[in-house]
Image 1 (cartoon, rainbow, N blue to C red):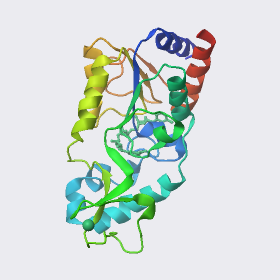
Image 2 (image 1 turned 90 degrees about the vertical axis):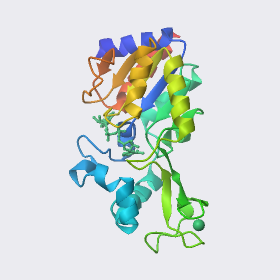
Image 3 (image 1 turned 120 degrees about the horizontal axis):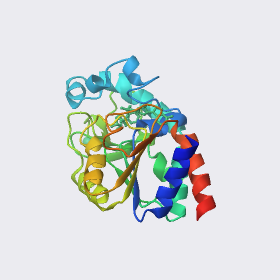
Image 4 (image 1 turned 180 degrees about the vertical axis):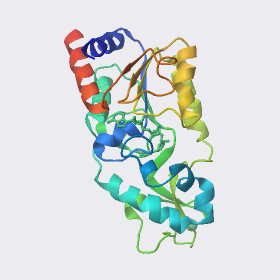
Length: 248
Ligand code: NAD
Ligand code: ZN
């Protein structure tokens, strides 16, 4: 473990363009449960079903009650953890260019990263399904479920449900960053949700080194990633940044 931390710091020091791909695991230490893995929402219900656009269109009130309301409470309180802070520190040190995140919680921006691609959109805003008005989530009145726009249309998160397209700009920019980088940190993602999980493959094919940080192995481990640092994101990032600061 200590060897791999040192190796990661050396790889970061040597790299010219570093990017990160983060998943729900990066926000676990901010008390936002992931979908899969221990303590994941998966244990309560099947997120692929509840968070699918067809479920939302069929019964928006049910999806608001089962998923979105809880998400709002969790995200209202969530603060960046040491993983978010570590990635922001890497940017401050001139060692992190872009964070591609599958998360919709806005915590990378709150920690201080300035170029964050929100691959699955954001929960900070809701949008009207009829007139496309955008309303900040914290201003949404939750007395009536599903909440509605002033025009009467149903509000939905400005995020991507399973079964929906990735915002064109986010997909295009992510692919380009994956092609251009020479080191990608893949943190807290089970790497099974597509097309996000393809980004490390694109990076690898373009000659980049891939370092995974995750307490569990993933389909990338041992084939796409060069090595896995097996551990929680916060403590691992702290150790890597401390080591890197000694080197540069
Ligand atoms: P996932 O839920 O499929 O997998 C979570 C991964 O995080 C697992 O591999 C698990 O081993 C790992 N993990 C658990 N604790 C960790 C820790 N302390 N440090 C590092 N890793 C840890 O997550 P995913 O791959 O991002 O895919 C799920 C989808 O759900 C994403 O598309 C995302 O949009 C959405 N989601 C977002 C949030 C959020 O915004 N915070 C939360 C839940 C789900
Ligand atoms: Zn409207």
